[in-house]
Length: 196
Image (cartoon, rainbow, N blue to C red; front, side, top):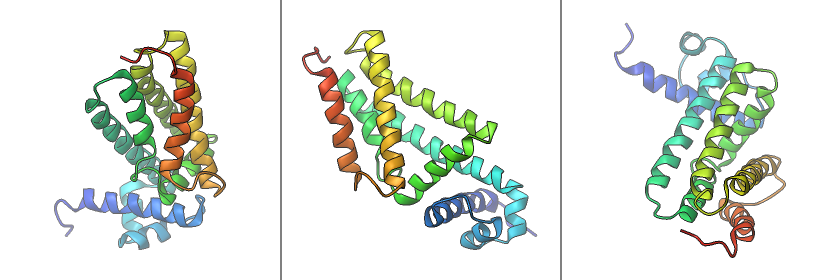
């Protein structure tokens, strides 16, 4: 008889094992059996909770996005100025929870798989809209709406690009360097503006 309350723990273990397996391989070339083994559960149980590997990948990306969203909301609540809001979004994007090799590999796999999966493409669009909205929440207090929109788009592209370069092991070596690069861009765009 299954233990009451174990399902959420096992689901989380399978999601963590998925991130770990993708990180190690650098691709989605992992099996449900391999993921289940890493999570310490049977392959049958993994299939019971998630069905196919695509559904487990979807759940994994939803989990990563949920954590990113929670961390971003917490960071935004701690800010006092429009400029601090922008920096908070950048800092969370490169936080220890997000900018680690396994999670970066999962993001890269997410981007690749989103070209084939409409469900993952929808998640990617949600992520892009949230990132843009969060950046705009600070930028519109500093720039005109049109300028803020352009700077938000460029900042999001920098963040995503730094993830891709890091996944390919060709780029910034750490989160602090990534944050500094994005902040340099923002300082260039925002210099001379009155910063509320």
